Amino acid sequence: MSRPHALVVGASSGLGAAIARRLKQTDHAVSGFARRPSAEADVDVSFECDVTDRKALAASIAASFERLGPPELLVYAAGLPAMGKTLEVSAVAARAAFEVNFWGLDNAVHAVLPAMAARRRGTILGLSSIAALRPIPHEAYYAASKAAATRYLGCLAHEASKEGVRVKVLNIGYIDTGFAEKTAWFGMRTPERRASAVTADDVATAALELLASHRMSKTLGWRENTVAIADRLFPELYDRWLRLRR
Image (cartoon, rainbow, N blue to C red; front, side, top):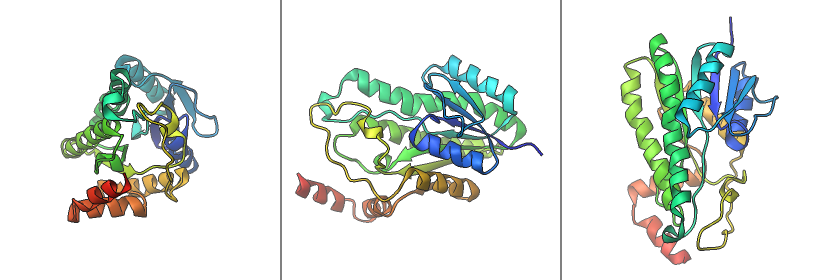
């Protein structure tokens, strides 16, 4: 029996690389998509492409179908930060975050979902953020792009389920992968941030657990779950804590 084909967008580093590696270890045939080549140990085949270029991404994904067969899984792990004081963040950086975090996801879905729907099977998993659930200072554009992507996936889940396709979201917090340091912090110094105890390998484990479950979404990390629960039960509590920290 052939190995199920998993596509990981953003597989060249960080969380995407960790998930791709784990999928390959669990007997998936993995295609990696990113601006840079993925490590040979993490994927079966690597495609260099720009997720914001719909035609180029679609062509790369179509080529992966020819190499490794029809898709069983799409993981969208590509992401781009746009951090700093909201009025100081450049329009270029803000729009770039939306292009990667939201429109790149939409581009990948358009390239993969029809093939899944035709076979009436498959799963789409998007990596999102606690910032999509709870406002965080100095992350306005990043949070907004992730919130848009999360709501997009939630809406898509209802539609895709009628075609036999599952859609899931994994929410994570700050993890020390160097992601937040990829861009300048506009109008301020890069803050000292404490990562939770969650690692990239933990994210990969959580992703596979979510894929195997009947749940649509999961928030990873005790601190992130505390924030999410407190926000639902006591929406003003977190705001008061933030004011005290200023």
